Amino acid sequence: MKMRVIFTIVGVITATPALALFWPRLLASSYGLADPDPMTTALLQHRGVLQAALGAAIIWGAFYRPARVPAAVTAIITKTAFLALTVVDGGMRADMNLISLVFDPLAIVILAVVVVLHFREAPSTAAPA
Image (cartoon, rainbow, N blue to C red; front, side, top):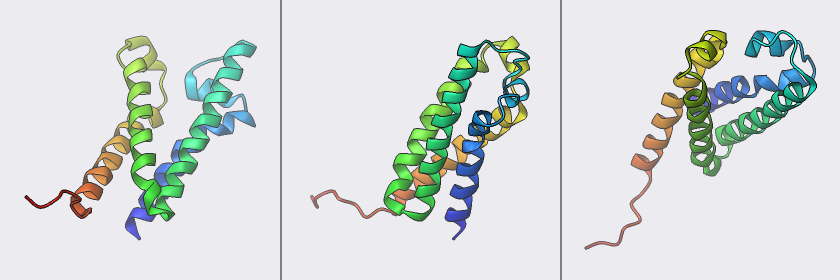
């Protein structure tokens, strides 16, 4: 039950960038962009769709155990890549919102623990020696 709650919360928060599809003004608070050009807006809205898909996969993992590890590993990879591309630059880091700076690293740790626990609890498939 705890795993379902954790995955659901992580999935919902992960999917929040999709709100930019309906409220493009959120791009200013989320990404520090006051007046993005149409292509930048479209790219960030597309990012929102991808984040919604990732969030949905994480939520799916909450209720369908076989989806848990693939969803967690995908989230770990994508969140790590985003942080690696942004946090290393002081200017970009200053423009990042608190969710990215706090939630993403926390989610990476939580999901990594889930993956490790999954493999620790999984029965060994190795042939006896």
